[in-house]
Length: 343
Length: 262
Ligand SMILES: Nc1ncnc2c1ncn2[C@@H]1O[C@H](COP(=O)(O)OP(=O)(O)O)[C@@H](O)[C@H]1O
Ligand SMILES: [Mg+2]
Image 1 (cartoon, chains in turn green, purple):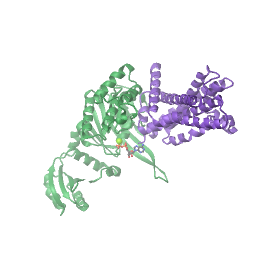
Image 2 (tube, chains in turn red, purple):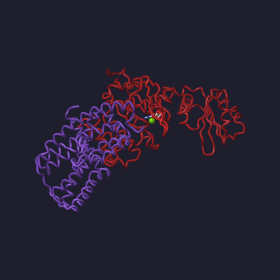
Image 3 (cartoon, chains in turn orange, cyan):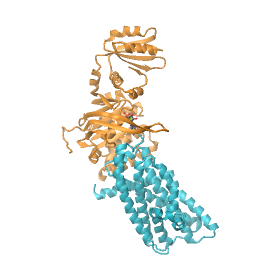
Image 4 (cartoon, helix red, strand yellow):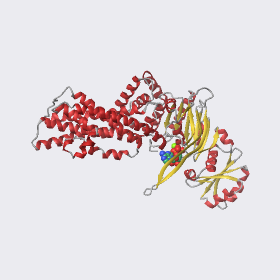
């Protein structure tokens, strides 16, 4: 069943579906089905850095957990390096590493190097290899010199780097990272991106999830935008941008804009989306239109007597593309996740 | 995996688990401090009752030590699963390329061996503070009794752990199993003094026979052959039950997403 070679994708997801059975209500518990992933298909080539980008609750973690054999798909299939994630679990597990964001998943009461030694054993690293391998990984993630300290004293960033070292112990061919930069400060996040890049440079295949569009754009060869359990766009950052390239974004700074005024903009035939960002004193309206910059005057008149500050017309960025995709495909729960967005 | 690697893995996990337990105040208390307190109380009770015979003190000290062993087994095998789930390490262990049953064997052995250190501590306490004599009527059988007790409690611990993998709220059940088992397995008072309908339950539980095997070798009137044999028989039965349950439990965990707290 297994196969390897240039033609085999590193990761293959075929119409993956996953539901969860839960309960609602505290006193009268009623069973409830959550459709976390609703039919996801994609392929990742060997050596590719592939991003799953989507808001909280989109189904990113669930997708990853199916790919790393932790969860069974409700339907559909997936293969990693040609091995089926449902049946060939050991073969898959030997070839993958995974890193979950956040500070869980470590033994706090012992040192970093003890954590690594323990998992090296569980991951079947040859005893004669372990010492060299652990030293190299400590070096890679920049923990050399701190490895003998107890993990409970580690900072968030150090924990995250220890996680990465753990995930790489058995030199896996495919690496899954679930929101690896969550909770990191900007410097830590940048270092993390460099580490991820160096993995790909070393020939690894990486699938990472993130809800930061800029992170996906900066790192990934291709991005699948996932929303409410479905892939709503797939391509390079440039491809996604192209989808709305002919649009113009007009940024209008307002002071105390009313809902009715925003509603008037939204209903205009030439406006395809309105997104609002709250600032301290003002609001920034991001208006997407297919009519070019000359729509600006009309927009201003639609705003009526709203006090207006700076107005800028510009080319769309990937962020605009992302906002557009999520807003036009979102189901209610996904929409609620992005607070101040008006479509 | 070669047999050599398997042994190495189990040894590694055992040793790691002992270190984790040593670093935990909860287990220091459960394994070392609590039995000392029980033993001290019991020593004073017996003393005020006039019974200061060395054999009675030894009976009490071994019982108190075994209470610590049971608590450590219960929380170090079952409770540990709940903690791992909370820490986020359970998924990592279950999903490692190594077979999870070997990891569980190592964890269980770690907890039980750690628990038996508690017996040593209790004995030392008895000797130092109460002048308890250290003597054994069958010194050559004692190591076998200890081995039998460790193996049977370990197997039972593994069975407990498998059920804890399955149920997210198994810890509540675990807490319920501490004191009643002390009582019905004869750690506090002889099983013979308990109501007749308790006896069959006692016979199915490893601590009953483990305790009898150890007490038999130290203060018994006859070699504890039956108790030692029962330890090994129960160990095999528990182990088979644990392995069968584990196959089912791991399949269910992948289906129902029970390994993490989301
Ligand atoms: N174990 C679970 N039980 C019930 N619902 C779950 C569970 N895990 C995730 N969900 C639900 O499934 C959906 C997708 O979750 P998730 O895959 O974690 O999304 P993401 O990682 O993109 O934030 C969410 O609505 C979430 O609440
Ligand atoms: Mg997630």
